[in-house]
Structure formats: structure tokens, C-alpha cells
Length: 539
Image (tube, rainbow, N blue to C red):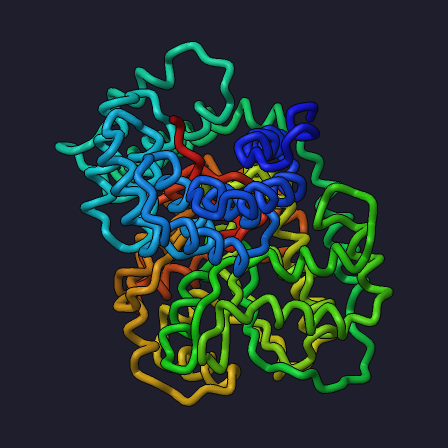
């Protein structure tokens, strides 16, 4: 600071202070310091790129994109700045825009595995799977133990007896390491491999081994989930209903891996609709309005406090936050599964918004969540490390959805069963569009041809037509899922394997062959939400 007191024009000094703040997750302070540096040296692309990085961490997406575009306009040449610009665009969901910057960074520094990893992830989310495979392979050639690249690479395609990486992955898993994330990624890659090879019991064994260290570290308590579901139910709206200033948003909610991305793509394939991806905007705006002291966006205290507010201003702020994303769309889809906790608050804040809740066979839904490699540090997904905890979470979710069914208007809250989409794609598509106030358009039946980027667990699957391989998947695992079945049945659910068998015979369902590719994941708020992907590359 003595140096700055002597000469406030030293933009480099402000930049260094900003990097220190960012390294300590003080992104608000970092953004302030970077703005000072940029004012003093507006031709420094590096400063603008890192300003964008700080702003995206603060969920100020429009401003972050502007900063990144400003940096890009200065045509930087150093690879770290190029990579940083790519990171900002990718975290804003603009993966196609990010790819050229990652390509330039990787070309300038072909020895940097982090740059190649970021390039691979954005290629994958943009639908360039061959390019993603090449970049993941190059990343692993430089850094054979890059476990995030391994889990992502294996997720890209079906593993076969003649083309798989099981031996390398088993050797990596056997290496001593105290890194629970490393075991999680490598173990999930092995589980995906053995499932593809037709060995579900071996796959389940690898999932158990993969999650063991993370389960112990997380020390997840299902009672916390139960308290959260109960607090959400307390936010149910009063019977009186007002009109809001916007009917733009369509919230797609539910458990992860139950068809939320599929429904997002169906609706956003309509020429009058668009997808915003997985946003944390509503949760963050509600948290700021509630003024609760906890460092969690979603907790019982915050839900209770938000439930006591006049939420009209929250709704207005939420719609305003979508301005840079909507274009000329009549409907904008916000596909954040965790918004199921906010359904009551959403309806009170935005009475004309639509909420679509995905449902799926309980055993399939729970297995899909257990198989999921969540790309986030959010504690809200810690239930996924233990099969019985997944079952208890499902029971809480089921009760909450029943509550919303009873308390929210049927023209604003609807449920869609994944299996029903499989059995009657056109009929359910027409029902969805009618619910959203949109005329039928055949493009919605060809959702897999939608070229828009997908940065979720289904980035591979939703680019393929519907088929039924994931319906009734749980029956392949035999006795290994008995603990889950007992939890669900003890919670009052009647499980019906015959229905899933009939649906499997009826039609072709959406492929769910791949685990979540999990390219990184900062766990910080951003447009990509629970599937945040890119990490800042090293120098």
C-alpha cells in the first residue's frame, strides 16, 4: 500500500492486489481493485479479463460478458489472458464463444494441461464431441493423472471391450492418495466403464468405493435435508393471487438426472423460447432480500425469512437479471433443479411464471442421483454419496412436490413424468407447450437437433433422439439396491417394476449412458449453476 500511496497511477500494483483478493475468494474487492486498474490502463486486456472473472463469480453475468468482450477487442496474445477470457464466456454459458480463446491459449502453450482441459469441456458442451475427445486425450498425455479429464473423457462415449481405459483407471485408483475428489472421479469413470461393459454389479461396487472418502468428509446428515424441505413447504402462497409484470420465465425443477435438461431442450427448441441454462439468480436475489447472516444461499433460516417478505420486488429483480439472456424470446427457461425448494416463493414473486416439475420412477431417480458425479462443491448434493441418504432425500422431495401440487395453481405448476415423455413424446410435448402458452411447433420434437450449447449432465444425451435404455435401469443391479428399496418402502412408497417394464417395451427413452462429464466445477455462483465447468488455467 505504501507504493500505491506514493503513486496511485500504478495500475499493475492495483492488479496485483486484486489477484490477492481473488485468491482469497474476495471477488467483490477484486472487482473494485480491477476497475481502478482498468481506469488507469484501459488498454490492458489482462485486467479486463480478470475483471470479467471476478464479476462472473459474483453472478453479475452481463457485466462479466462486457468485460470479457472488452478484453477480447484488445486482441491479447498471452495464453493466460486468452484462457481467462474463455473461462468467463464458458461460465456465462457461451461455450461456442469460449472455444476460440481456449484454442488460442492451447496453441500458444501446448504443454499446459489446464488449457487443454478447458478447451475440451467447451467443445463438449458445444456438441463437438470428436474435438473434445482429442483435447481430453492431449490433456491426459501431458498429465496422466488429471482425474477430471478422465471422468469427462469416459463420459463422452460408450466404453467397449475393445476400447476402454479400465486398466489405466484401476492402476490410478490403486495409487495412494488422500485426495477424496481424485478417488471420486476415477471411481466414477470406472463405474461408467463397467456399466457400459454390461457389469452393473461391478459398476455399483466402484460407485461405493469412489464415494467412500467424500461421504466420510461430508458427514452428511439427512435431518438437514428434512429441515430444508419443511422450511420450503412453509413458503406456500396464500390463496389470493395477483398478476405480475412478466410471464417470461419457465422454471424447470426436480431432482437432477430425471429429465430436466430434456424438457428444457424441448421447450427451448420452440422459435419463441430460449434456454438460460441453470441459473442461481432467483436464489441469490431472494437471499439478498432476506438479509440472513448465514453463508448459505439455501437454508431454513433464509427460506423462512424470504417467506415473510413482499416478494414483488424479488420477482422484478429476477426478470431484470434476465435482460441480457432473453433476446426476443417470449419464454425463457431456467433449468435449475434446486429451484424446487423455491416454488412457493417463485409463485409469490412471479405469479405468471410457469413451473414444470420433473418426476421419474423412484428407484430409477435415486439410482441416477447416486450415479451422478455432481460438478459442484454445494453441500446440497452431499446426499448423493450414500445410497440410503439418496432414498431419504427422494422421500422429502416427493412430499414437497405433493405439497406444491396441493397449494399452487394448476395453470402455473405442473408435473411431467419422464416415462410419459418416452411413451408419448408428441402428446407430452403438446401439453408442455400449451402449459407454457406456446403453439405447437414440430421443432420441439426434434430437440436433439437443437445446436445450442448444453452445460449439464446431459450434454451428450440430449443431442440424441429418445430411446428407452434408462427406463427400469435399477432392475439390472439386483440385490445391490436393496438398501435403497427398503428406505423407499419404509417411507410409504409402493414400487412398481411392472410399469417400468411396460414403458421400456413401449418406446425409446432418452439415453442416459453417460455420467455427468464433470469438467471441473468451481461451486461458485454462475450461469452454469450446478454444472459449472471451467477452471482457470495455470501459467
